[in-house]
Structure formats: C-alpha cells, structure tokens
Length: 255
Ligand code: ADP
Ligand code: MG
Image (cartoon, rainbow, N blue to C red; front, side, top):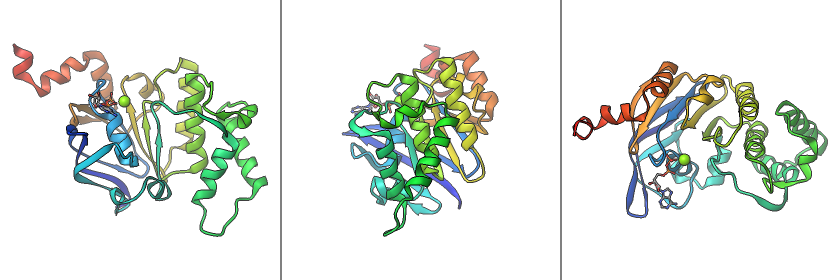
C-alpha cells in the first residue's frame, strides 16, 4: 500500500513503556493530525519512527510503502522517503544551511551522481523566497542563534528541498507567533498534494486553522483514543483534554 502504516506500535524508553499499542495509517495525499497533552508520547512516536536509538520498539511494525523501516538505519529511512521535522531543532555550529542542505540533497542521489550546483542554488533560493527566508541565512550555521520561528522555517525549508513521501512534523507550531505560524502553514500547504502524506503533531488546535487536516486523532497515554475529522480538533479545543480523560478513564474521573 502507498502509505505509512503504523501497526500496534509499542515503544519503551529504558524500561518504561511510553507508546502502548498505536495504530495509524497515513496514505499519500492525506494530512493527519495527532493531538494530545504533554507527556503522552507524541515526540516519542515521531523520533522512534525516524530511528532515534534511545527509543526501543518492543512490538508492532512501521511500513513505508510496504517496506519495513524499523530494520533500516535513520539515513536509509530518509532515503526511503521519510522526513521528520523536530519539535526542538538542534543547532549545528560551523555548518552553513547551504552546505547542510546540499549534503542532504546529495545523499539522496544515486551512487555516482553529482548535484548540479547552479540548479541546486536556483531551487534553494526559490524555496527560500517562498518561505520568506532571507537569502543571507544560507551562509549562517544551521539554527545557530535562530529565533523559534526561524528554526521552524528552516525545518520546512529542509522538507521543501528533500521532497519526502511522508513527513512527520512534531509541534512545528510550538514557539511561533501568528505571522511565523502562517508562513509555516503556507509552506506545508504548498507542499501538500498527492505525492505527500503528512503526520502533523500538535498540542493546540490553532495550527489546524491554517493547515486543515483530513483526519484528527487524539492521543492519550501512548495510544490513539479517538479519531475523527477536523471537527474533532474544535471539539477538543472547546472541551479540553479533561474531556478525553473522562472518555478513557471514566472511573477515575468520577471519583
Ligand atoms: P509529548 O511529545 O507527547 O509531550 P514525549 O514523547 O516527549 O511526550 O514524552 C513522553 C514521556 O516520555 C514523558 O513522560 C517523558 O518524560 C518521557 N521521555 C521522553 N523522552 C525521554 C528521554 N529521552 N528519557 C527519559 N524519558 C523520556
Ligand atoms: Mg513532544
């Protein structure tokens, strides 16, 4: 199937189970949002899918267009078409954005094929213009001294340059003011289309005013406990996460 298929996934950090049986299928062309309170395992899910070594998959599977990516190294997963936008993008002092992206794009080319520098810069600049990123940023070190909004725009720029088949975006809205949020949303909306599946992780409904998802899932204590369309996000915003808690743990809530 042309999809990112997560089946009954269980993830531990050390001995502690964090994700406890999560099943979700993101087809190409679809945008799925996962909403959930802090500490529920959203970032754990994102990082484990990307192959972070601290996160141990104890059960379940993740297939990308039918291929088991859990057996692949993180770079193989990226080449297979997976992209992760970090909640907290790290700074890479001494590595310019231009060189970083060039290396990333080069790494995706078939063995022996060289990137065409002129075409690369042309593409980079057009993507930067679209995302309203100043061209002088190309010579700055990746994320070093960037504001929250600039870091998130830089994540979207990477996504735009790498053209993944599936993008997992972990709280790309966190720390953004409304103008930065709109630019990020415009960037994602511009990349949206039949060749891309998006898993959008967010704590707040606000981002979903700008990136309207096809499906919304509510995550609670390491599982998806409710799924629906975009109206579920509005319901959640109105009723709060206590409402979900009552759905999941009625006995506790009644006490
Ligand atoms: P969310 O993104 O939904 O806020 P996280 O996936 O970041 O949640 O965290 C889920 C749980 O796992 C939390 O209890 C958190 O404290 C714990 N956790 C996350 N990362 C680590 C880590 N590297 N080491 C230990 N515990 C962690
Ligand atoms: Mg998180």
